[in-house]
Image (cartoon, rainbow, N blue to C red; front, side, top):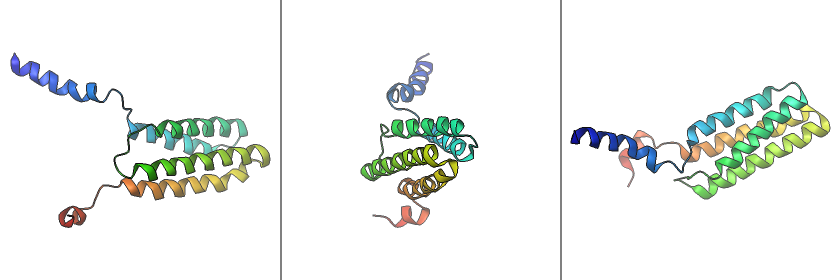
Length: 129
């Protein structure tokens, strides 16, 4: 019986300790989906819905705990928000085609800032101090 209680406590502990945090990985997947919907939108209302959701999700991501290079990560999220808001403004003023440039820049920022959080490679782990 003691073993069973210890196992239950062990399995419940991570969920209790992590209750304040949200699942950043799942959140990022939702951001990717909203971004994809905004890129694939063919009508302005559809685009506005998708880009608004994307902006909201990115803003929510700023509350996450970044273990490596937090300041740079937050700067990257601010840049993404600025590009998304620019894309929305251009789409509403000049049409969806005008929003493609800032949307493409968002993908570039994503690639750039994801490199900050890549796990270390085998050789880096082997020879790092």
